[in-house]
Length: 361
Image 1 (cartoon, rainbow, N blue to C red):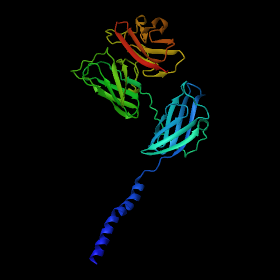
Image 2: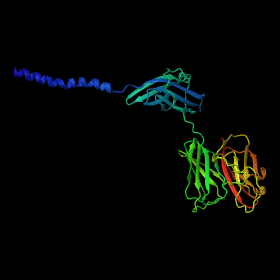
Image 3: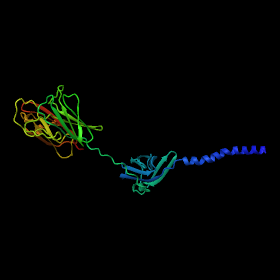
Image 4: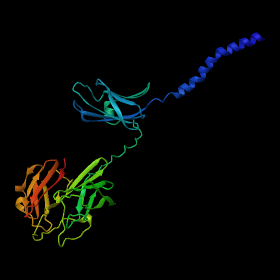
């Protein structure tokens, strides 16, 4: 009896590894990833199958695998990249040494690990869209259109005297959700404006005794949105009898000229630019560049002192200039262009004002 039991136990031990293998095999099979699947392949050519023609391929199949296309008559395969889940694209320019015809075989390959799926078509089927049709893939996310960053308007309330205790009020209009500051000449720190409504920024600064504001230098507004920055400059306007007191966001230098006053020590100003600072104008047509002049009730503009430069070229003789404005019309190539205007009033006070715009490419 004991001998019989020993034989039985020994036989069971010999059979145990086999049983373990039989149990483990199904689990191993279930762990293998499914084979990738090619659902469709289509292509287009901008010049047929002639040398120099660009072939563009689109394959739809299992997502997150390696994809390639091999064409009969080409030496190497064309790799495809996944632009959306399960959508693979690639392109190839035919060389003079390539031998591709409508009957050439096209093999679409998807590979995941050691599992490969291959579907074969003819070039005619691929170009005519007769390969197997797949379920329409989800559309690619729309490309966000980033609007041009620019300062629509930069204004400042005129002040009677630049002295300690006087309040400087600024307003800027531009892209909503931005950070806006004003650099004041002679003031140590920039003034940060507050967005009072979408795209409209306001702020004020009271001049201190320690400040040394130079009225001959322009104020510079800086608007930041993300990693983009744009600036705009403004000469200091001054109040005069009869000037209207508009809100800071709507103010402009005086439109008319007053009589010359004794002791004129304020520089004139240039405003109402056309095109505006940062504008983009269409290409092809002549561009009109213009601006208005103001002297804030001072001695008046000396038109003979006006000098106008466009992208480094002096165009004063080609422009129409008077005591109130200038106007220039000319053809400009695509790209960024700068305008610089210098002039004096009859008392000898000088101002230089510049801005820039773009001609569309």
